[in-house]
Length: 191
Image (tube, rainbow, N blue to C red; front, top):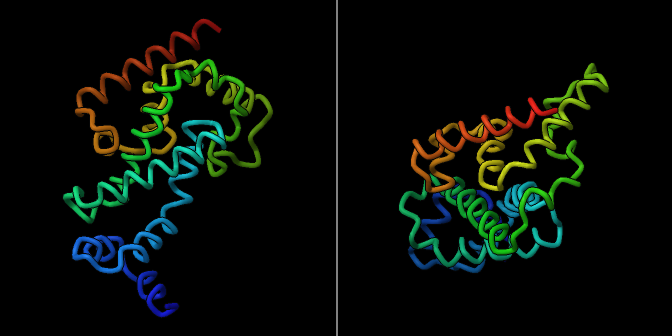
């Protein structure tokens, strides 16, 4: 059995998906996919939901959706993008269903949202304070506006990638980004 699981570890996502679609040992293959993507899905969900408890529930739902809908994946080469889209949409649906809007998230430690690589040792307390203030203002945006803004500027996704993950048209993403930036500018100007 160890040799079989090692075989799956060396296969690409595309090869794993092809095996599943041909009816190979799906339990072992799903286990490999789960192991590959769990941390990515978990931490992206945690970034959006800001709650460990909610994240655990949602991550389970995400993997159930991934496994149930795998047959509908049209381009196996885009599997990681497809998983991210399911993650994003499931988290957004959870927030909407549970009416957990940005006011509930205002108490989050903002420094967790700033990638460590963007901070260098020379960053002064004033700069950290400014970053905290900006992130607090971002948290005041509506969930969808905030998430699209973070996807574009924090995760550095292109407009096209955001359309893939959200299912929105390119013009809708651009418009929501513009509105989010405008709202953020208004919030900044009020301080």
